Image 1: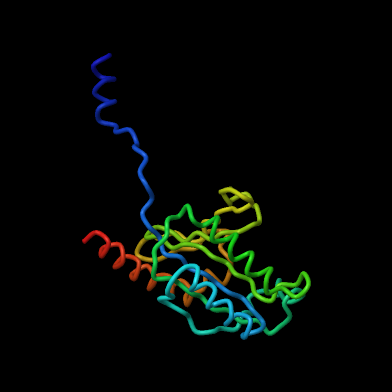
Image 2: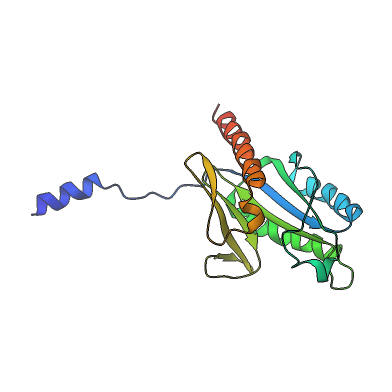
Length: 190
């Protein structure tokens, strides 16, 4: 019996902690005033480095959630940054974007909503300050929201994925950004 246990133990390898692979910083901005958003782009580049992708501006009409606070019409743009980050930086990044939202607010009403997250080869994680059953607490009031998983050659939504993140256009965008990330990771190995 003892030999069988030893044999099984040898075949099962204990997990050995190692640093996470670098990930791609992505950010969604929802805004009503273009000039305010354009000012923030420069601050984001100062903090996180060169932007390597900027989506076209799109109408944001998936929900009326932000209308009372920000007015309408609302617009959205996605950015990604050339410099890869460590997933642990997500808390610091969300706190910084919250600060930018407050700096550009008019009284207590935000004029820009910034949602940072990261894209890995396996998933898309968004940072949020709102707890929920499927969100994992990180620190300093910030939760990680697993939003998309990569399966069968495509990012796939989960039951709680926001409707706009389920759209084929946005999933296609993240699939293209995944290709960029994959190339960047291969370049780091050289």
